View (spheres, helix red, strand yellow):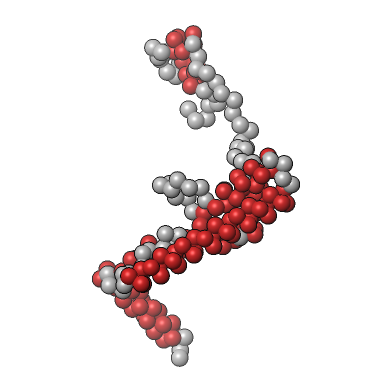
Amino acid sequence: MSFMKGDLLTTTRKLVNGLAKPQPVWLKAMEHAPPATFPRPDGKLKTISLPEDVYINKFFQKHPESKGQDVIKISAYDPPPARLFGLRVLELKEQGVPEEEAMAVADMEYRKEKKEKKKAYARLKQIARLQGTKPPPNPYPSAIKERQALERKFVRERFSNPEILKLVQKMKEEKRAERYDGTAGAGF
């Protein structure tokens, strides 16, 4: 039925009228109350854009290092810094502040918040050293370091996992055999 155009009702009608299929029980009921038809897009789906997306892109141009911070965390309640920046610019524009000034104010607030977070963690580490205890984990780690911490287990595993070691040994032997076969066939 994939070569036939139309919905279920029209294709079933064509098959029944062509005597290719017996009339199903539900056909008459469906003809009396056909299913709703929804307009189909022209093959192009519109991209979803929010009003703050323009400012988010400008934020990433100004602070490319923060792209790693904007990973989607499903369990997080706080929006990423770029979205906060965009929302703050829109909020200031609604209050009548010009766009350039609004972006400057939002950027200043972002930098101030970032500095405060670093100072707070430095103070936590200092208190831990004075108490003689291990410093707490960084509550504001960089996204790159978070990813590296997750991957560290797998990186270390490659040196101790016997299956991986066998695979590496096999690859080395194949490489040696290729070198030997390649040099022997060339007449060296």
